[in-house]
Length: 173
Length: 256
Image (cartoon, rainbow over all chains, first blue to last red; front, side):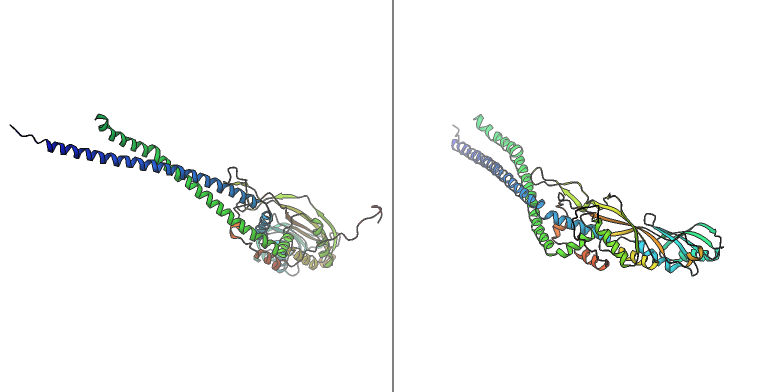
């Protein structure tokens, strides 16, 4: 009669049962951890939302304080500073043109009129010279001036006394 | 027994489902909400800091009333053409010139200041998400004053110089100097009696109480650059005199 070892099979069954239970425990533990994590996330998100809302409410209060009160005066003063910086550095050749013309005048010639125009950045002068040679010297002198970038000659004629009446357009640099 | 065999795979599937469709999206949502909170806190801290600096700036304005007045004289908040007329007349008279005419032409509005420094802010609709509104430029109003004088070249030149250095911004837009056309040629060559028409650009900046730019650098820096005021005082030597009416009130406006 052959001997059958039933005890060994029973041992293997117990071992299998134990592994199954351990695996089940691990899986259940993971499930519990996941559920716990989800609950934590839920409350953390809720807390973040309420804190954000509180921060926004506080921001509104701070913003209302910012746009009210004395800040309009601060802004106004700052605007004036910004504009003044721009304006103070603007070139103003209206006056500066006069000393420049004086310095470039050929002796013996005199002006009858001058017309400074800021929009054209130019000065138109009407002068009287004894002759055309002097008028030419005057044109050269204006051309050599560092204040002007160009000279164009306008109408020229002789008056009843034989003097040369001329017009020049001086472009300011 | 069959149920026992299926339990573990079912639970594993449940874990996967929970992780992918419940916990992970929840975590992503939390991250996004925490980012929003971080942003809201940063904005709050920013505006709190700006409010503190704005208080300092407000105190600086009170403490520097003289400098504020200098700047308000250079770029006034109103046209104040009467002050210009009075000052130009005084300068011409002091310079031995005769004023034969003076006029103020209608205001022409110009806006030439960079918009980046002057954005207005809209009131945040969503409570905290303040955003720059459309660019609002401070509007500088420009107007012309024409002055006619007679006198010598030296005096006209001196007047032009003094006007250029007035402590109120202006620039000479036009200057016409001419001799008396009725004089004979011989007299014209030696005559120093001239007639001048000076066209001047003046401006002012009306105060706008509705504009407060939260992004203006002054609220981050917490101080004004007052050097411009010293520069005005150094470069502009002709003081603007204020004007008072003197005695007023008469019984008959048609009799002196």
